[in-house]
Length: 208
Image (cartoon, rainbow, N blue to C red; front, side, top):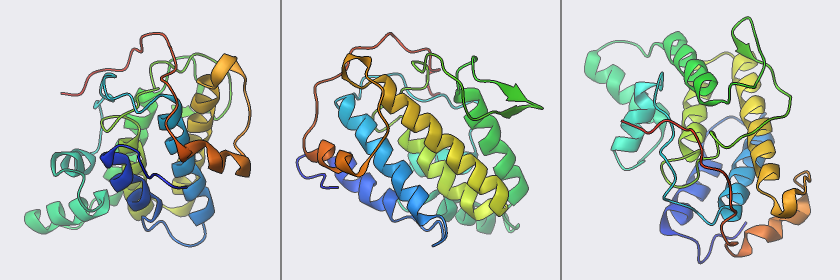
């Protein structure tokens, strides 16, 4: 997708995020997720005035990535912290932190079984629809870190759950409430920003 004429942060982060190292096997699903995120941003007019994404339970490496102008990747900042502490990366802890953070960001109506989100269902997504540089892009960055730390099954489950949620949010902001699945035709959607969609005030917690 071309992002020519889009905000500078989109022109920087979209191609970098799409090219992040998540392995060849799952590259197609990863790129589809990043593309859906971009389409959501386009539909919302790159709204930078929304509340920041919640930080409760967020892995420190995601915070370090944000603090350092989103340079490099979350994995790079994990490695840097481990080198400074002279300890190995605590992969299990990161995976647990990401799961806790993502769960906490999701609306209460989403079903949970044994403390784990169940992919599926319908409800209001307003609390999670947080566009802009302080929004959902940070979840994608955190997922890159999860690819480094989690086993294949956990990584793939979280990737697909985030992708499903992103797709549902995109449907929720489609004009006239029309729900439609992403398709190859949508590649043309990102050619120019759309006007902002009107939505109810979200309940996302502000970042500290």
